[in-house]
Length: 397
Ligand SMILES: Cc1cc2nc3c(=O)[nH]c(=O)nc-3n(C[C@H](O)[C@H](O)[C@H](O)COP(=O)(O)OP(=O)(O)OC[C@H]3O[C@@H](n4cnc5c(N)ncnc54)[C@H](O)[C@@H]3O)c2cc1C
Image (tube, rainbow, N blue to C red):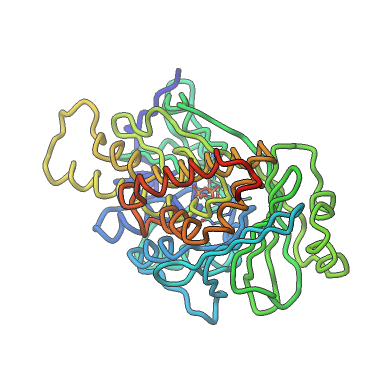
């Protein structure tokens, strides 16, 4: 098993920072920004060039926007499209249920716009940004960036869902993992809703978010690796007829989507952040927010370590591990509920009917997901009520 050894001969200042980050996606850049705000010297290497696109539903929940404020990144309503909440629609039964966020609005925006904003902020703080630079690991555990050895106190793996850094840090052991498949395309049309809409179809879910005054993003997630974008759309005739004659303004872009929890996210001076450190199902809409909150917890843990001078402690970032476990709890729980609904059509229809009959329950679930309600405040009573109604025969609902 390879172990990352951050200490090697230095070649240039960008290769000898305090923190070297593998991957300049949202989580890597957020970590860089927060660390630079604390006065640390940071370098980020990414083999792509900005603005980097990625398959995403492109909805930023209110808690994600709050986390972004701490990065010094704000978005105006002219750069993005606000949404009030989430609407679930069952494609078979036409059951529909919606809930608004308790506080604030969400924002939909193109992934490339978000990336450009984060890059601009990181550059403004003096982060060394090494674009077009692939990071690799040698057999002896040395990290290389474009063939040059990297020397830094800390190495952070922020290289996304298919992380190699996870393997390099010997952190790939999972508690659980569910892989699904996703695709995304943009269409030129005026948005028809100020909710993010989630259509529950036979073997997929289709999420529609407005990302500009004349553009919507359509993201499809399914357990089936072979499902094609237009086959999936045809499972929801109402949506299909809206989009069928519209021009796709981007290519269909695919990706893997995972609910994954790792046993450990750090070892010594090496840590994972963002999707590399485990991820939640896309239907929660919490991937970006989680990455931003993990970045904050990681930088705080590094800061504490540096400040308190605990240089001989065997596992330097246990504080980060504990925070990471806590931060992901509600979206992980919600992911499990979403995956259960995906796998069992009868159960899905029942849950949707229960939520339609009792919208306040959906509202509480949504606010639990976005962190406006804690698990303890969600209430045993509500959890039991949901459970009880699940056991109630269909004709009584
Ligand atoms: C279908 C779908 C819909 C989603 N919808 C939403 C949503 O609506 N809202 C939300 O908040 N989240 C959503 N998510 C989740 C969100 O997209 C991810 O959580 C987020 O992109 C994770 O960011 P990251 O920085 O961890 O990883 P990434 O964005 O994957 O960035 C990783 C970076 O690492 C770079 N890299 C990889 N390997 C190397 C290497 N060896 N050397 C150098 N660079 C490397 C890559 O080029 C990439 O830029 C969705 C996900 C999917 C799949």
